[in-house]
Length: 601
Image (cartoon, rainbow, N blue to C red; front, side, top):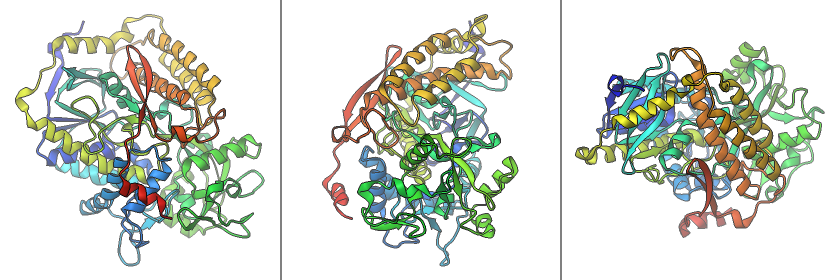
């Protein structure tokens, strides 16, 4: 049994778990509101998937198209999410995104410029107008650099390579968190009346993913076990263009900017196939092949754009269909070709990170040859259900922002909305958490020694078992199950099989054992992560089985149509004893003045 008196302890007003864009923005906002703040990050500061959002941050600033405004952005976001978004979150996001971008610029972010000196904005799938503020193809990196520099300059405490395994509560209110240092294995306790979860996504539950090792659904699982609900978990975004070959870059994203800057998708026959997949309700005038026209006409947005810039879920399904029809590339993808359409100088100037990354890591020269790409698990639209204005969950003192939060993106996220999402709602979460934490400091509750001991003993359990299950074998089996049975195309019988196999994995995970000491022990780290991965995988599979239609990032082979009856229903996953249950909730009613926007062309 662990002696709680030997464990390192700290006290803060606001504890931010995660140091990507959402976590950094929340910490800055909470600090500026007068709170004592700490950031905990599982990896190193700056090592976050925000840097993968290479194309830009969506904000209706009107720098390229003066007719762009927040109402058009709101409408695009709701349509992209197949109207399952929380309307208030989509509204706040569209209204506040321009201010958040200008704020970044004030803090030192260096955006590309228009000839008039304004922040440049590029085109992206699902957006009516070019509205992504960008820095070449490394926008996320510049955003992280700017926020990280500001957080450090403000003197906010940062605990790097530290993992949170449990949230403490008393009387239904958050009181703090328990974690461990990854290097030494020593435990650490944080006392704080508010916690902001900004832990990102769940991609490591899948075999092919753009996500790195940190993305094991930690925040999702922590919130679920604290009593919060997870909404929209059936909607998983498979980015249409992740590298499938060579192996050295498998899963790495090819930014949508490649398609936004002229890249086209071709099958093994060399045919530009996306014209075949333009939805009927979008068609007004189009061409049979690229020799006749490069763009199709979208009569909903009254705009012309390449078919490669359809929303991501539609492009991913089209690629999947080509591969299944036997027209895929040699390694199970298709070809993304910008080399034949743009000069080498243009590509290296507009897409410098893409060019250098693939040249150095895989000896693929994108100025001279096409890339082999295919869908890769990239982003989960589902997450902690939060209040749109404050980002507080149903658990008092627990907030969420960024990918770990649900509601903003509905059934499908538009490219570029992730960066502005984390800026808008990271700030709001930080402000609200600080206000709650500093309102009644005398009411704070200390964390009991019994709770600390229980959390420590649970974390150490894999060391107590001998000859149990290997964490790496369980993870491999989990990824295989999710890839095969709960992937981009789903069926009831396969998902039922997945749930049956997940139950077996849960039993095996209860018998995980690790050898050695707590120092530098990645097997132990994985054993603790697997608990979260299994929780999240169960949520995805059960919600996907419950939703008997196809919509956005959820495609059912046995229910291919989008059903009106499901158009007003959100699915919430909650923890019932030790099992996930799914309940239906009706979407909040959209005000008439916003609903009228969808009657316009």
